[in-house]
Amino acid sequence: MTNTIAARIADFLSDYPPFSLLEKKQLYSIAAEVRVNYYEQGKAIFLKGEKVHEYFYIVHKGAVDLQKVNEKEEPETIDKCDEGDVFGLRPLFAKENYQINAITDEESIIYAIPLKEFKPLAISNSQVGNFLMESFASNTRNPYSTEHRGKLFTEDEEISFKQEALFDLQPIPMVKKMVTVSPETSIQEAATLMSEKRVGSVIVVEDDKPVGILTDLDFREFIGTGKLSIDCAVNKIMNSPVICYSKGITIAQAQLTMMKHDINHICITKDGTPNTKVKGIVSEHDLMVSQGNNPSVLMKAIKRARSTKKLKKIRSKILFLLQGYLKNNIPLTHISKIMFELNDATIKRTIKRCVDKMEGPPPVNFAWMSLGSQGRKEQLLHTDQDNALVFADVPEEKLEETRAYYLKLATKVTKRLNIIGYEFCPAEMMARNPKYCLSLSEWKDQFSRWVTTSGSEEILLCQIFFDFDISYGDVKLTNSISDHVFEILKGNRHFLNSLAAQALRNPSPLGFFRQFLVEQDGEKKDLFDIKKRGIMPLTDAGRLLILEYRVKNISNTAERFEKLAQLEPKNKELYLACAYSSKALIKFRTKQGLKNKDSGRFINLEDLGKEDKVKLKRCFKTIKEIQELIKLRFEVTYYI
Image (cartoon, rainbow, N blue to C red; front, side, top):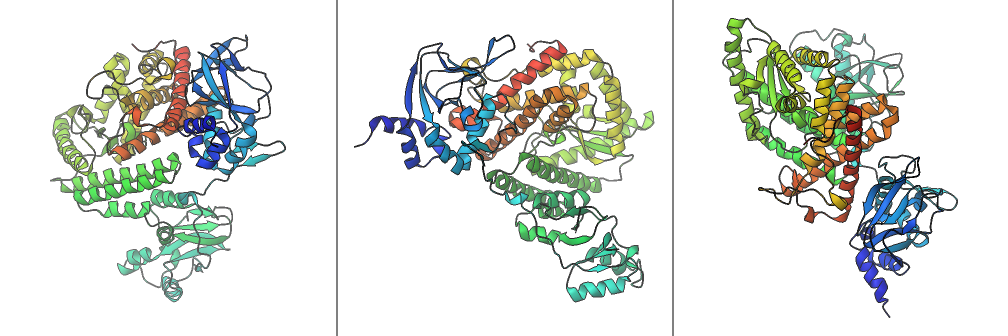
């Protein structure tokens, strides 16, 4: 005979993670053991210091306050749980007593899930275990704590989850039977060896230590062109120093290294440096064999592209690669680096082609600056163009003529970027706008005015331009701008306070009783703006705090918070939380954008499952905490 109560409980649980991740038979077996508890408003389910129960809990109806108790023994609500939220997970992860209170906020029905029956399922199902670990970390106000991560406690020992290896993080096989020669070996001898062994490279060694590498490309460059004789020694044409890694380099590391250094081979040594014995070699061909859809292949295609149409086609392949990375749950840090390099290469190639099409060469050195998400190395999807241009100072009588050249160039570039898929900026914050195509001195004067004026418009412009990254041209020009900016910020507390007030203009996006704040009117009515209410508050906070320390050359939001964690150990936990949340929100937006074939900015919350809402909630708790820190440090209130 069917247990109708257990069936109803199982039906309820099936809508919420982690129970939705269980098989039907497993779910029903758990439901049959669930205890149904009724609590009046204000009743304690457990209190700080109380011995842990043999259950964890999920709200069926009603609401529960999770409270932290401060030094004065005063409770402070740190989270609210409503229908479908799990809490009281400490018995799964730690043997010590409860560290927080769980008090009903209203009349509630709570399901108690027995640990004895549930724990084996959590251990055997990594998805279930990972969800519970994240929920536990969230309830303890530390979503990236490593203290209990990956571990479920049994009576006598810890059991760790097995994590499936991600394909890009797997070691790439190295070739052990490489060909080596001495620096004095003639080019002809080396070429003969390569031909006999049917290899595309030889490693030049001294005392078995790599001092150079020679490839087919070098033969074409120096011998095929007649620059050198085949009787010359290989040390005349070898590439040196050699980029080395130790055994076990991952596909991801190899991809990034080859793209960064524009090389096709990596040498494997005992300790990963050129100072120890050579063990093998990894080539670009090995990468292509290991992974068919390879970023380095796309990078080569970008560099060789001879038309905007071709770059547009490559861009679609980049998005396909992005989908694959997200589907396989590749860490966002790796995804962002790969996507940045490919986006940056696309921009570089576009500018290079446009420079070649101009009537004459650039009159003076210049630099193309990418702003916004691309400047922060956070651009994964197609978003609006945000860019600017700086050119070297010229005599006054040559200024407008020089500007006219670069405005024409910028018009060509932005037009082609638009064709590739980068929409025009609605606010015309692009290099084709005379406001943002300036000489070096003009840019310095502009930043000085913005910083000293400190109106809302100037603060907004500063925020955008503080996140620039050079995409093409003379890095000395952009470095000079950076030096100037940090010089005028020195001791300027008034400006930082104004920046702090602006950083609080979008408070934590959870309204009363954890309801998400959505757009109230207009075309996006009732949709949630994840950029405005989630990503921007963290971006603004990270920028403000890193500027306070006057740290240069870190524009990525997560990396800014990771640096801040080093600079302020007492706030390390919060800063790492912000880094984690920044990456989580960008990844969430990207998934939504790919799913809906748009920018992913506006989300219909009704389309989200409970698990997605729980993940967003954790990030928004972090936003609230970092904004509270800013309020206290800069003595400002929320921006009105």
